[in-house]
Image 1 (cartoon, one colour):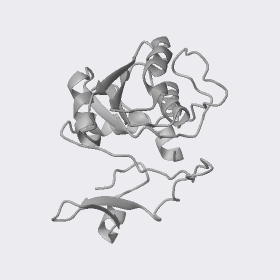
Image 2 (cartoon, helix red, strand yellow):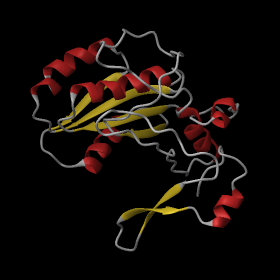
Image 3 (tube, helix red, strand yellow):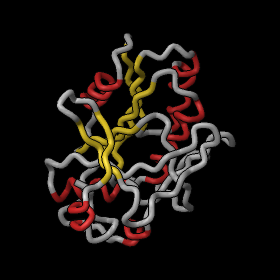
Image 4 (cartoon, helix red, strand yellow):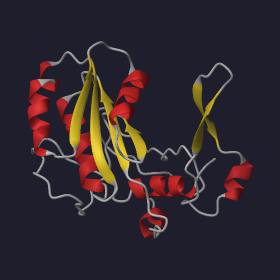
Length: 211
């Protein structure tokens, strides 16, 4: 999280909308799935986070059924919905969207990790010793602020990478360097491109969105 986002003051008039966080998983490792859930719970303001919806895309691992159902009973805002057949990420996300009740939808992968801070927004049972809810404080407000400014906006964070084997977190790029933006070509294939010069010049600081 860059210092500009942490220091920024977000207006409450109009108020920021609430959000439903939708997390799709298929045979996800127990520790990484819970790491994501704890990250969202510990880093999101309670007034903004209405619910976390876990969407099971027909997992076959036994621990993701009765064991998971029993585990999440301790969290009043976490729920699970399941697809009986494997239908893929997008269909699973749409299922989550149909049961969501917040004003906005936030879609996350099932293996997210954020840098831990000493600010807890919920009174929660402590995570198991092998499951650390590590998170950035203030990850959610900048996204919702852009939607409050323009309700037709679809926003995405600048995502830093995590080492596949060690879970080491790589710091975000310094200001003005190595930023990319996503794009689609005419075959609807997704890719990344470097920011053009005019976009770099338009942004006054790191809190400005990339278009």
